[in-house]
Length: 296
Image 1 (tube, one colour):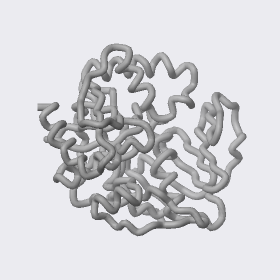
Image 2 (cartoon, helix red, strand yellow):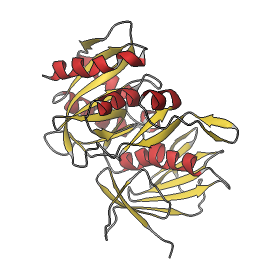
Image 3 (cartoon, one colour):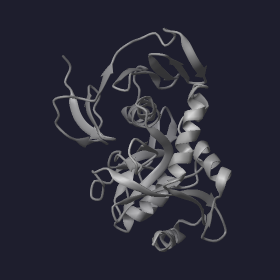
């Protein structure tokens, strides 16, 4: 039997044949998730929904990229990895810990948002927004001010209880070269197949929340000339949640009504606001003061 590395992430005990140094190490006898190498046919089983780079059946979710490999996600408790030959380990881990892990969390019935989250006074503040709007960089700004990271890139919300709870992801931020330089992380440029890997995971082990925490508020990031917070109302708030839901374009038709109910339920308990932030990284420290004032 292959060596198994043992980790903890998103509330799951993980046993993995693949070395995942970004994750927190935790010994466990009964894994909730097994990650292993293997081969499979991505076209097996009856298709429920499919599109570019994915295919879903009643039994599994398949994710595949020509320059990375194929992944089979089964029953929310197993990921089979079939990488292309000579794949860069950093690239492979980025996909496993990003899109593939988010697919598994969705498969486990969690509400998965594409966002970054920090711990302020034992409550979670999360930042949503389009790609490149600075979700991870905003979270990094809070980290530099002493606030622990809860999760980055994808946040999984447990809606089973009266209070929406966030399971911590893993002690890492996925940052671009520019953000790494600004945050005094290692700004070294990394290349794969002659192109630069723009974003890589950097460790934040000195300040990370390892316990589940309640979700306090959501902020949708938008570029602006001045720092400002304004509220969304009614249907607009729900649509912002839908827009930032992981994999919404890959949902089965039968999933949409339940998801809209989840959005409405979440907004009954958690506010969502528009947060306009300036382009300049040097101005981001002001966001911390503004949000602290906003949440009281």
